[in-house]
Image 1 (cartoon, rainbow, N blue to C red):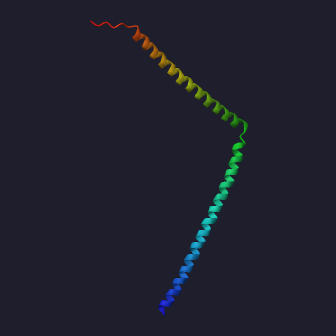
Image 2: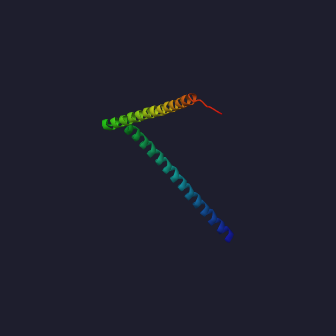
Image 3: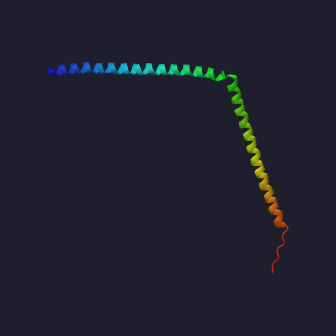
Length: 105
């Protein structure tokens, strides 16, 4: 008889555990859906905000982009000047060696 009572308690407890686990899973699904909704709302809000720059910010961004372009141009000029200098040095070294006469006794 005690085994029968114990089995009834076990079955009741298992049903309670299953119900609690189901509730926890449903809460997780609901919470995940809420997070997804919040992320969508923030994304839409940020997309609208990013496209609506006011004039000073827009001018600042354009100035920054122009400076970056100028820096890239300066770097290209520097590197080509350095290459030209190396070529000139190599040519000068070549002319210096060709104007010499080696005398061996």
